[in-house]
Length: 232
Ligand code: C5P
Image (cartoon, rainbow, N blue to C red; front, side):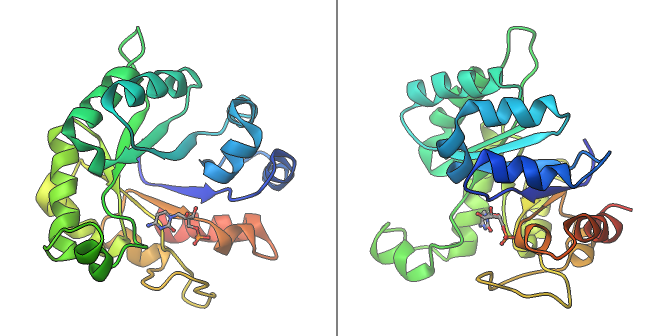
């Protein structure tokens, strides 16, 4: 898999999601399914989107004891998704168990990437609530290295961190980056953003784009603009 644009399908129902994807006649964008849609519709929505020929990033951010994560990952792997994720905070033991669970009898498995620290967690919460007294960027890079050491394929991170992650963990360690906006678009609630072209320049492997596509007057044109800036 090379550089690609993943559309965050943050819709509350399967009906809305499939109607949205119906607009992409003949195109099969890579799709991210998050907790809202998965918890509303269950595995059937994953099967339905997969049956239409899309690649799927199932963004469920698992974090539990290693045995539970291993068994849950085995279930997700059978759904034939392309990328899964978990919290690196679950420890190396949990990440290794997740990889075991994901690996199918024929040796294949979905890519597995880690969330390091959520972007909603700030330095103050890191220190006062999580009791981690290191600078956020050090924590993010250390968690990325833990994920790499456990055998994971990459991390979800800001495009602003992509270069540093590649420098620390290797060029082939994937950076999957949300927080992308067009130069002339609305930022919404995202604070630190890059355009698709900037994300390409700093070496992001996948950009995750939601509202700039899903809320656009012409979502197909917005998706194609992302492809032109980021992939071509
Ligand atoms: O609509 P927007 O482009 O902001 O959507 C970005 C997607 O990426 C959403 O599904 C959001 O939950 C996800 N995400 C993010 N920032 C993170 C991790 C995930 O925006 N740090």
